[in-house]
Length: 169
Image (cartoon, rainbow, N blue to C red; front, top):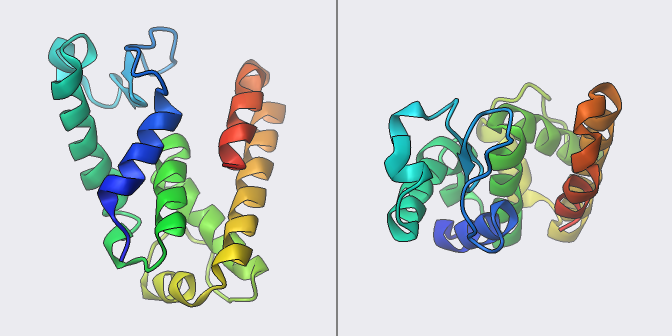
């Protein structure tokens, strides 16, 4: 089974590779490690301005409770797939990440509903899939999503290069 701690390290490197602090120009308000104040106002200054260690601990708790559990990371056999799904969920939202995973599974030859619900069929397909093939299709689906997002939201165009690098990671 996949390790949350290993996946967390990967996601934190994508969200803030230098652990440099708070992004203030995010549409969600102050953002640290990809966690926006708009969605987590209860964290307050202690998280957004406080010491690195306590902020990392809080971020890990949020990633585990809101993202890892939603993608059933503990039940995914392959670490690389679980890590990619966690990274996707943190960056684009849980539902969108699951829809893209289901799309990648369908392209890989499985038949699952692209409904954004992570049920037993989605989990079974992930664990039966050829890891290299599913990984490639996940990267393609992510890249297509980001390209579409940048096309329909011109203000997001500035992020496309970074998003595509993340999609292909």
